[in-house]
Image (cartoon, rainbow, N blue to C red; front, side, top):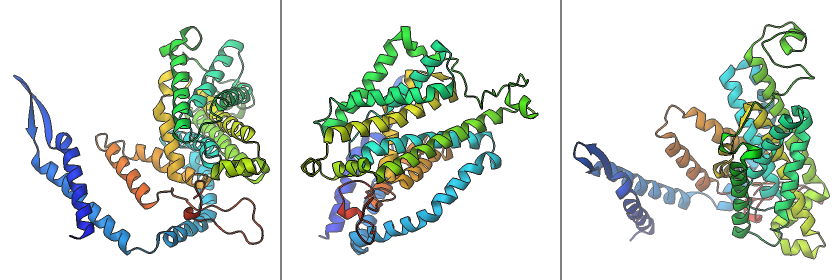
Length: 421
């Protein structure tokens, strides 16, 4: 029997076992109670889709060129296009508030927030190779630090922003010390537990954090002391510049704030990657034993990765708090860490451009399919599976060494353990 047909048939049988109770049966209510209605046509369509989809996939894999050459060619094409795509995306981001309405600006703020979170986590996962499933904890620390400092001491956003990053970095070091000897799945489990511990503490420390009720009335950021208020007067943005007040002014200002923070994160990451610390991160990612043998202090390398990545998460958390003017523990669940990690992995570990593109696709995709409330998660999951099949190492899987002797050549995904490949 043809191996391809055999593999497709096995896949169809597995699909039959999985989809039988989920798609083949439907629960309906009646006056006498609940009863099951069989749906053989829907089940047959799902199983047939799996069979023929697997058949097409295996046939395509058998006829395409070598995996190394295909990945290398696509990586080089993405790298060449990135030289033009990056300035185009940056220019579009700068002019977005002028060409879009309130909804477009709000969506841009949401996407840029996840871009910043993705770039921050990329330091820990993509550059240092440390799998972190509790990144949302630093996001929460930054948000609650700003909220508590602003309400307790009357401090503004710009004063609390560096403090929120500092507190988040401190918690990153506190997480890094207990996990210095852990790697892989064990590290992931501990970081996941750390994120849940932070959320539970926020939920139960009602005298400090407000518990499930959260913290409301968080102050908004100002532009050199000018508030975005409808009251008018010389101390407001519209009154100082003689403009008619519009709620879009505050939203556009928030958009440029998060754009500036995201660009700062990107610039710092690129600069760190070129210095000794960034090269130590990459050495740690590739082989920790070889890294130790070269005399690199692994303890300092890991702690700096956790601290710097956590600091950027804290900055994003402070912005999240001031944008919404309300925070609660429900905003910092594990699903947030999973989304940010998915953005980093799908974009390509270590790739700044890939992370930005993945955030646009994932976060923007949720909004595009908002009207398809019943099917958007199905479509979204299918798209993720296709990306992982076609590009298992992410959208941008090639990387250029930070230091090279002679000609700089891109390293293919087949030749690196993690990183941009």
